[in-house]
Length: 277
Ligand SMILES: Nc1ncnc2c1ncn2[C@@H]1O[C@H](COP(=O)(O)OP(=O)(O)O)[C@@H](O)[C@H]1O
Ligand SMILES: [Mg+2]
Image (tube, rainbow, N blue to C red):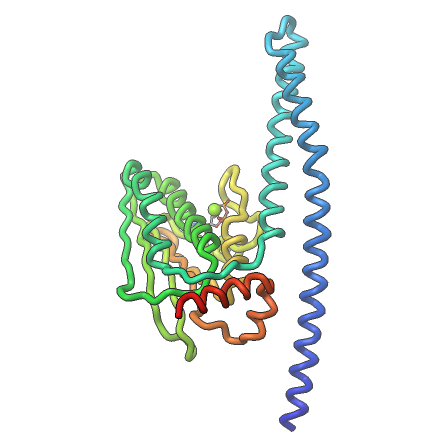
């Protein structure tokens, strides 16, 4: 009985692994495809810029018309380049390079970075640090990127509101389903999200902003899932939004960690551990 359940689990696991491999292959293929488009697109952009330069002082109405059209083409090429770069950074996100990190330091650095700008815009940034928060094994630059994405969204939400508001940044540590987790919370007093926005906000390319890439939350969720964590959102239209980033202190399955990490990285962390004793 027990062994048959185990077999089932194993075959399920096998299926998931195969699926995972296929997805990874597809990601590589599509990433390569996007990469191949990059060079010809940049050639088109450069040549357009050169023609625009030559027509800098249009002599006739006809030349003025051509100049306007060239400008439009140039802008569209730039937009394509932005889309391509965003796409590549999404499909090519490397696995986390974990090292001992303190989430309070990450939050402090970020509040130093965005605090002055927020104050200048008349907003209020409040930060709560969980006292004696132990270090955690995460990729500091990826977590920084995550918090920056969330704070940028919060700031844009306040701007949309058109009046001044508040952003709250906090760290926490608690026990969830029997495991220790560390949490970063970003709360804003912006307009909140309607149900249909809330449902789609993590989808790649979903954006309600003109000129928004719609990749911020997709990348955020992807990076946190790669860390074995999760992103939760709670929003009340007219009142505000709260994003919670949950990071497990210990990975549930040590094998999973071994699968995800490159051998070099494992050596690095072993070295670090040796150095620490
Ligand atoms: N703090 C927030 N308040 C209100 N809406 C938000 C907030 N964060 C995200 N959203 C919604 O989720 C969408 C997707 O966000 P994101 O993936 O960062 O893309 P982008 O910021 O480029 O639009 C936003 O366009 C917005 O509608
Ligand atoms: Mg965003």
